[in-house]
Length: 147
Image (cartoon, rainbow, N blue to C red; front, side, top):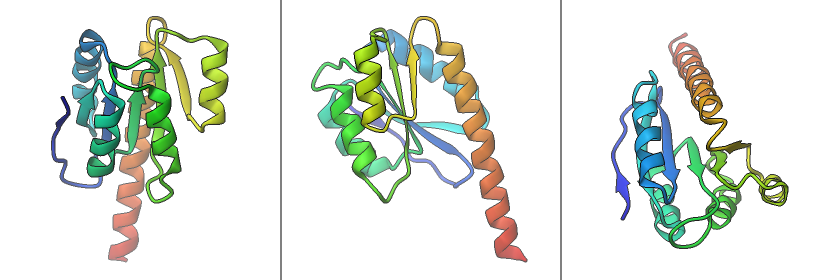
């Protein structure tokens, strides 16, 4: 099942999560909800559903696990990074931080690779930083248009 919502305004960093753990998704969603300028635009545990929903919602950031209920995070990563029209930040967040997964992810173009258990705080810090940069870009774009 895919859950999506609409986001209005370009100042908000749109985030989509693809993960099979409902507990992790709930924890992540709660943390994201407390970050100014960040909006969850969807979540699912299926690679097939994720690819369709990501195409529809055009998130700025996709957080994905490697092992999913249907398909893999690599399937989603391949699709996200092959779309040249949307420069989406891809983040792998997994309980399986094996070196071979990291290498494959990096070859496929992942931007960040985190261990779920030990690096959750780093993911949240990264999202805060990305949201701040996104707001700065939106403000500078607005200023450029009004001058």
